Image 1 (cartoon, rainbow, N blue to C red):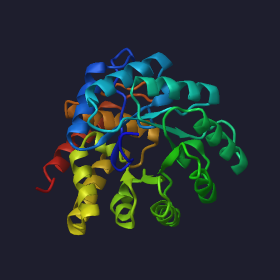
Image 2: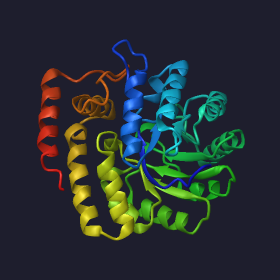
Image 3: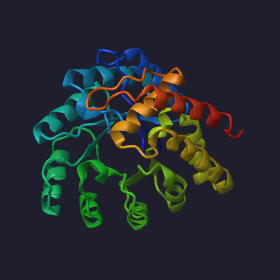
Image 4: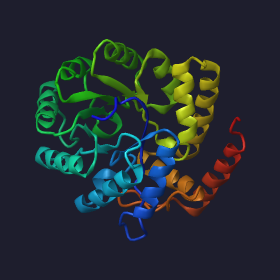
Length: 302
């Protein structure tokens, strides 16, 4: 692993053409936007509609991202799926294409007891050529990886950390404290609204989807938080929360992702196309998102 999993990790949207193919030009533009502003790209995660993308198109996306990154930052790649063997094969292929940290959540079709979760992540980590970051996202898997199980899995030599998107402050506090005391195991928070809180507590990184649009704000938020400028960090937390609200408020995730892409299209970073089962928002809602985005951008503090 070229670098420790710290800092701002951006769960990248996957840019598509109108026909549903990967738009490599937009992938490279978006990766450069992210990396040039001090953040790490994470392709093929939840925000990237990964499970909706055919296997060969995932390779197209990853290759474009690695090419655009030019070894400047750490490339994360999601390998989650319903089939363990396919996730292992994806991990091997992605590692060969330049991914440095592999990320996987639980398969979501069957409810799993903790024993099965342990066996799943252990078998996965045993067979991967690059470090695995386990990913807890209850909103999509409908399961929470127990805190005790995270601690147990941290002892695996090829499991490098946890990305946790569960909205539970007590859990956050416990796992941040544990990671601080556990060499070689890192904690990244996927709950953007609590970024400053987590970083002040000692979290190693944050994984905010709105950083697709505003990586510079989240990078400054990160640096301010770890550098002790809490007043500036809290200002940036409020600003970035406002941007997130524009496309997330009162929406399911399948509706929020097209909204985020509308913002990115307005900023000239990629087209707003999604693939099924995400579909375009109506014209009126799209216009509202652009209008709110313009107003919020005028309020960005200097």
